[in-house]
Image 1: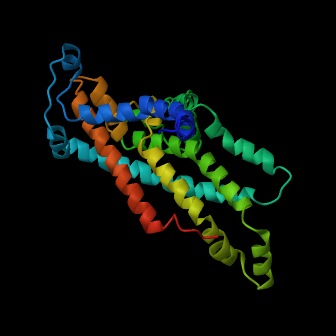
Image 2: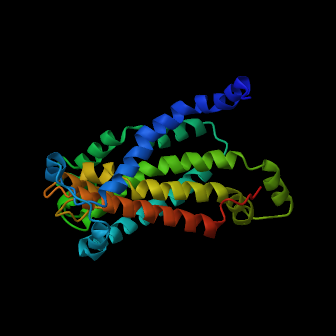
Image 3: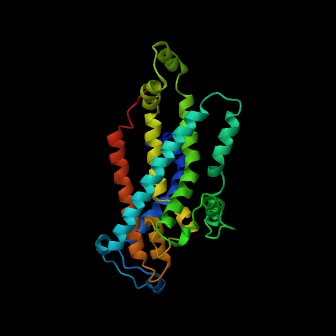
Length: 300
């Protein structure tokens, strides 16, 4: 005979988990699943409202990989991501090492360096857009380079300056996060290790190479992977500063998808297909990266 009390005890944990799983299903699983479905159709905005779209299988994916424009945008996305993440990690680590020294103003410096990340991205991007104004009397960047005798640059309307402009802005935005991650990790390294190294006569470089770097590796791998995923999918910086221009030459994959979705011919099926491609690209890179770096192995 079924024991009601035992059944309730078994179901109680699932009852508490239901709100979280229900929210995830509504806000994550359903949209993702629907996106996969749309990628297999010829849906456009007109066909969506007239309910005339049809299932076309993998045709959108075949068309995607045959588009020269897709490969150009993909290559630009790789350059954008690798450049930004490399400088985020490198400069973030450098600042963390500098701020790790015990100084009276260490807390103040950390607060100042954290401001670019704490300020809403929309405000930061609008400020950077204003600083890139081609007129020196309005654009701070051109005013600064003018002091060194250089001519004003039309940053946002010419290539490669427009692409360089969004990369510079994103580097400025992302460094504080990496700095705080590495600062927290440096605080966890036992001081006794450095004291022992001093007794053995180790130089500063040797202590950094054989103590700091190995112990920071798990954090560095995780932070760089997260940074890669975030930067690969970063929409707001490019959209707010250049809008993908000039002539769509600063588009990365996510802004390219947005352009397909929201501008004529409003090809929602193709946009969904490229979104699915982005998902599998990031999934593959994440698995390979974690396997190569052996990030799941404990170092201490």
